[in-house]
Length: 217
Image (tube, rainbow, N blue to C red; front, side, top):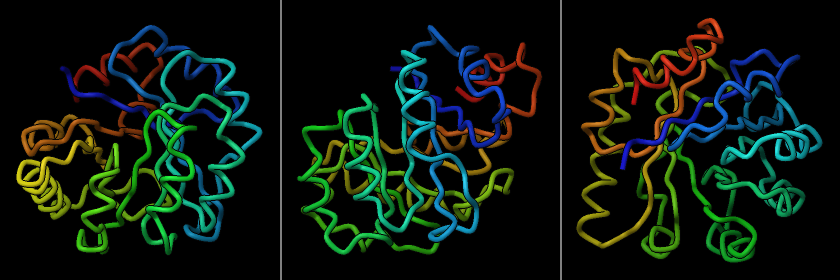
């Protein structure tokens, strides 16, 4: 299967979100990445639940919600009927991640956990790893678009590949932060399944969005 590319609308024209997303309609192996920030877990503030509900009604593309919030359970509860394809919460924000995952397993096709650059993979227990559909490796500090790729994030990817092969885990590996055509090849070769890209795609003209997607795939 081709790598999945997930354009992050954090970098799109917020006043024309529906039109921006429409450029990707009909594409295979493409998710729309929704960076949901609360101004507490990360300094920045993006869009909230009412906007996501409207987005979910306007597109047939798989929606990928990345919760950069202090209370992910609230968001998971409020959005459980939106038909989101994947929802990812940060391990740093949850004391009982397995209980949270189990509570919402039937409401989301895929549930993931994200780890910040300085968070060790040892925070993810074996039991949790057996249940996860996705692990999001942050290759920048979460909270802002346009940052530079942190090379050491690939060490986490390689360790996740090793654990997956050794233990038989089934999670998909996603990476987010500073992805472009300059580093996408080594990221794919490291074993990443799903590449999130924001600034690299949306700083181009809309007519070039799909060309940008193809260049990192």
